[in-house]
Structure formats: structure tokens, C-alpha cells
Image 1 (cartoon, protein in one colour):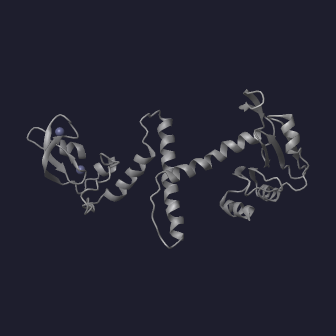
Image 2: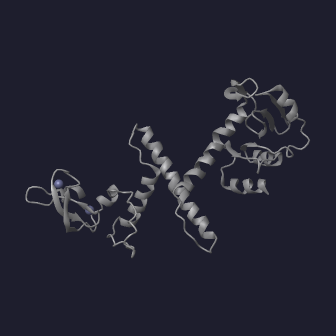
Image 3: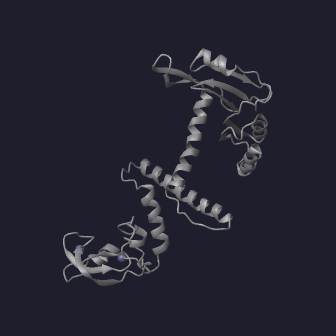
Length: 284
Ligand SMILES: [Zn+2]
Ligand SMILES: [Zn+2]
């Protein structure tokens, strides 16, 4: 069943383009790796002990005796599937149609017996696996970080929400990559980025509707993530009506003068006097 999931998910992947698929030991089998290879899709994954069939590999005990970094591997000559068993803190077996032992590199591990850090040989297949599996863990972590907990009896809505959250996380990662590529140090946090998307979707070309206020006045209003509206809201030229507010405060733009003129939509104080029109400048 695990293998079927991967085959189904790979249906839309362009064939014979050397795409690599990485999955953990719930999914991996030799049959799966061979099936994907037929479509020109490469595979790296950890594999459960009972899955590689009759492939004779060193036992865990033998490898433990040889110590950290001991390796055993076999290659299936017809389909070129490589199986590598590596002893780290415990034995792990991996299977691949595109990676094997070489080129090896070193990693640092704590040796319990010697009570010191030792350099351990690491096969290429392990490096490949760690490299890409980290991405899956990362997206899981990012998705769960600021999940909006909605409830529904219709199970398929959860799939829809997950898709939306994935899109938000992916766009934040693209945004970060873009900032890094131009050397922009001022990268927004995921929380801020997500809040700005929400503010933009709600406010661009729309008027701000009064929010629901809690009947219980002891409950403080939630802290706003976006202190200033996102730029696309600020400059959308829609519904930015000036209103007078009770308490004077610093102008958002010039930040030198006190004013009681407020933009209703941005919820910010901006000067509007004979000398200064910060209100107009801010919105253009
Ligand atoms: Zn001003
Ligand atoms: Zn405004």
C-alpha cells in the first residue's frame, strides 16, 4: 500500500527527466524503486529490515562489533538498485536507484566506548536521504506553526485547508529565497508574512468593517501582528477615509507632529494641515 501511494503521487511527475523521489521506510520496497525507474524517476529511501527480500547483508550484531561507520552494500545487477546498510548509532538500511556508497564523506558522532567525538564514514546515499528528507520535516514544522484551527464535520475541508496553508508556507519560502538572493537582510517572519497575506486578502479594494468586539470587556483584544497595513493595502486608493479621533498621537509618516486625523482603513494617524499633507503622501 505504501508503494501505491508513491506511484499515485508520481503520476503527475514528468517522466524520464531524472526526478528524484525521497521517502521513508513506510513506503520503500525494491518493487517500488524498479517501477519508478521504468518511468525514469529515481528513488532514495530507508528500508525496513524485512523488505529487501533475501538480500544477504551483515547482521546488526556484526556491524556493531565493527563499530561506527561500518558499511555493507549490495547492488542488484539487472535494475541497478543499490542497498546500503550503515551502522551509525544503530543500523540503518537504505535503498536507491541513483545513489550508492561513493562519494563518501565524514560526519561527527559521539563514541560511547571511547567517550569522545569521532569522525565516521558516511555513504553518499545517507547524505542524499538526509538532505531531502529534511525538507519534508521542515514543511511539516512550518505548516503546524501557525495553523488556524478550524473545525468541520466535512473531512474533505481539512484537505482544502492543508492545501491553502501549504501554499502560504511555500510562498514564504520563495519570498525568503528571493530576499536572500538580493542580499535583503530584512526578511519578514512567517507569522508576519502570513498576517500580511490575510490583511491584503481582506482589505485590498475593500473597506474595513468594524471587527467583532468581545462582550466581556475584561478580555483584552488580540495583539495585532500587522502594525502598519501591507503596501498593497496602503496604496490601493480604496476606502481610505480620514476621520477624527479622540486622542492625538504621532503621525505615522513624518513621526514628528501630533495629529488627530486618522485613516479609517489603515487605522493610523496621519497629518492633514495647511502645511503638511502626510495623509496624501502616505497613500501614494
Ligand atoms: Zn505627518
Ligand atoms: Zn489608509
